Image 1 (cartoon, rainbow, N blue to C red):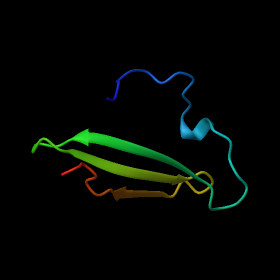
Image 2 (image 1 turned 180 degrees about the vertical axis):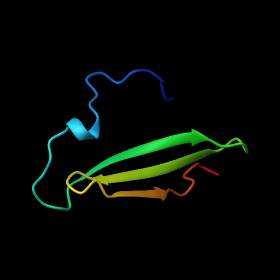
Image 3 (image 1 turned 30 degrees about the vertical axis):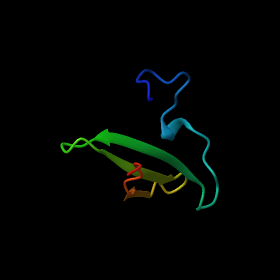
Length: 64
């Protein structure tokens, strides 16, 4: 079960170490309930140098 709360020692992506070349990504998952009772999951990828962001809707992985 997931617990909601504050993440300790969190930092904004702008405050994290920058790389001097493209291709180093920070990844996060965002899980959100849907109106139908399921969960939508987004994979968010941010290049640490260019700040290019890619967001992908992940498939439903619940057991049948």
